[in-house]
Structure formats: structure tokens, C-alpha cells
Amino acid sequence: MSYCLYCHQSYSETWSWSALFGVNADPLLCQSCMAKLELIKGDICRICSRSFSLFPEQYRQGDCCYDCIRWEEDEKWKRMLQQNRSLYVYNDFLKEIIAKMKYRGDAELLKAFYPLARSKFNNITRESLLVPIPLSEERQYERGFNQAEIFAKSFTSNVQHLLKRVTHEEKQSKKTRKDRMVKKNNPFIVNDEDVVKDKTILLIDDVYTTGSTLRYAAKVLKEAGADRISSITLAR
Ligand SMILES: [Zn+2]
Ligand SMILES: [Zn+2]
Image 1 (cartoon, protein in one colour):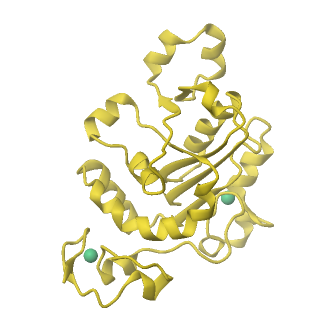
Image 2 (image 1 turned 180 degrees about the vertical axis):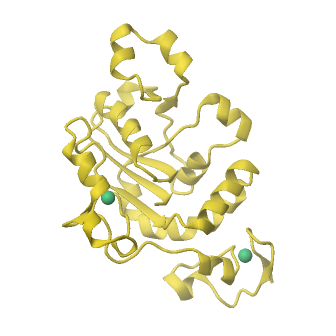
Image 3 (image 1 turned 90 degrees about the vertical axis):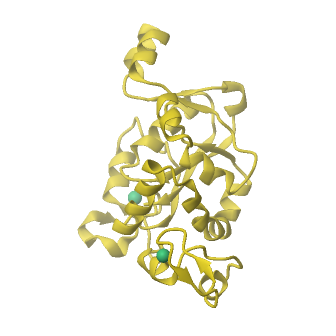
């Protein structure tokens, strides 16, 4: 007998990942919690991996959703993010799980997502530098962990901390006047530009909502000389 990491009910191990997805690992969640998660599958947006079955036809053009088309039509953001791939739909249940993780410091829950994430994204993660989206120092201190970093480490121990998230005040004091104007809204700076140059980078975060956090991160990395930038998130 095992206990569900989320609801703490006991569940029998007679069901398993292998039966569901061909993944050989303890599921860590009970069947009823697993049933509330919606795996992203079928027809998806080529760029952000939003599931086309979840929104009306008129918000889609070809193989892209309208949000992505708007990003790609903007010269400033075009091709900034090659693609995002996500595991689950960001539904109410996953919102609850992620909120619990963040605000109650319950990072253990992330482990329930490792086996499937590894098996699905193995080929994408192998050839890139994995860079978690950082929290600000203040937030990281409050929470005690960065869920994006923990998620990234489920793929490789060689996680690169190439980004720093700065507060508005820090930026004002550290930047030149030109930088202040150009990067006014961008919370990220690159830690080590030498490592970034010509690299294929895979950003890791917990959720893709509007896509702007990932694109801001991609922008500073591109400006530092990175070649291609994609991303993986737990939820979309
Ligand atoms: Zn459960
Ligand atoms: Zn899209």
C-alpha cells in the first residue's frame, strides 16, 4: 500500500504508470488524483503546445494558436521562443497542486510528475543546456526552494543557473541609462554571457500562462548570444 502525495489517501499499487503510459515507476498519486490531471495530447499549437481541443476554432490559424500568432507578428518577439512543450493542462486541480507546492513549501509533490516528464521530454532535454527560470532572491528566500529548478533537476544534474531575476530597484541602480530604457520591463539578466554564446537552451518553468516570462528570459539570453531557445513547463 502507498499513500498519495497529494490527498494522502492510500492506494493500491496494482495500477501503475506502465499500464497507463508505458513508464515503469511508482505513480505517487492515487488513481482519483491522477484522473483529475489532463494530459496534453492530440492536436496542439506548434509553438506553445496549447491543446486545440480546448478552445474554439476561431482562435487558431493553421497549426498555431492566436496568442502565438500575435507574438510571432511582433518583430520584437518573433522566433524568440522556438517552442514550448508542456505535460498537463493547467486545470483547476493542477492549479491547486502548484499552489500547494509553492505556498506550503511542499516541493515533494513535484516528484509525481518526474517519470512521465522524463519519458516524454527525454529527446528534447538531451541536447540543450537546461536553465530554470529563477525566482528573485527575496522570493527564493521566502519559499526556500525554486520549483522550476527542482523540476529541471529531474532531467539532469547539470542544471545551469544562467539567469538572475532582479527587482525593479536593483535594476535601476545597476544599469546604464540605455539599458534602463530598453529592458525596463524585463526582470531577467544573464549571469554568465560566455557560457550562453551559440548554445541551444531549454528553459524550465512550472507553468506557461501568457508566455511572457519565458520570452523575457529568452530575450536576454538571445541578446547574450544564445542560438536557439525552447522551453518545457509542467503545465500549459
Ligand atoms: Zn490522491
Ligand atoms: Zn500557441
